[in-house]
Amino acid sequence: MSSKASVLVVEDDREINALVGAYAQLCGFEYRAALDGTTALNEASQRPPAAVVLDLMLPDLDGFEVCRRLRRDQRTHHTPIIILTALSDAKDRQLGRDCGADEYLTKPFDPDLLMKTLSEHVRREQA
Image (cartoon, rainbow, N blue to C red; front, side, top):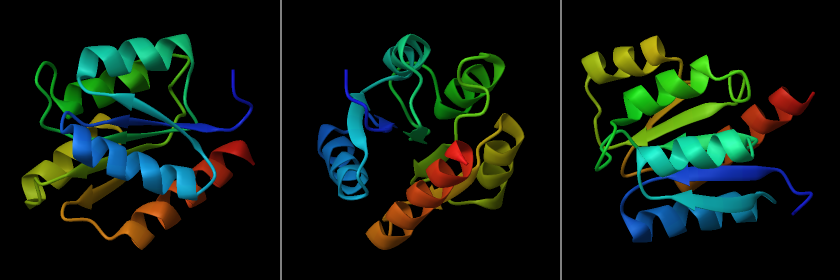
C-alpha cells in the first residue's frame, strides 16, 4: 500500500480518467481509477482517498448520488469532492453544492486549475 495520498478519479471515459489521473500524479498523488459509481463507492469505503474527482454522468449511479453517499459515509464524510463535468448550467451547479461537493469544475477543463484545486483541498484536509 502506498504512503502517498491518493486521488480517486470517477469517470467512465477511460481516456479522460487516465488524463485526470496523470494530473493528480503530477501533483504528487497516487492515482486510483473508478469507471462507475458503484466501483467508486466500494473503493472509497475500502480505502478512503485524500480527494475524489467525480464526473456526474456515469453508467450506473449519477455523480450527484455518489457524492451524497460519500458524504453520508463516516469514512469519506470529510473527503474533498471535486465535480468535473460537462454539465455547466446553474441548476447543475446548485445540485452539486446541494449534494456536498467542495468544487464544481467544467469540461473542457484547465489542467492548471484542476491541479491547483486538488492540491489546495488535500492540503486543507490534511492540515
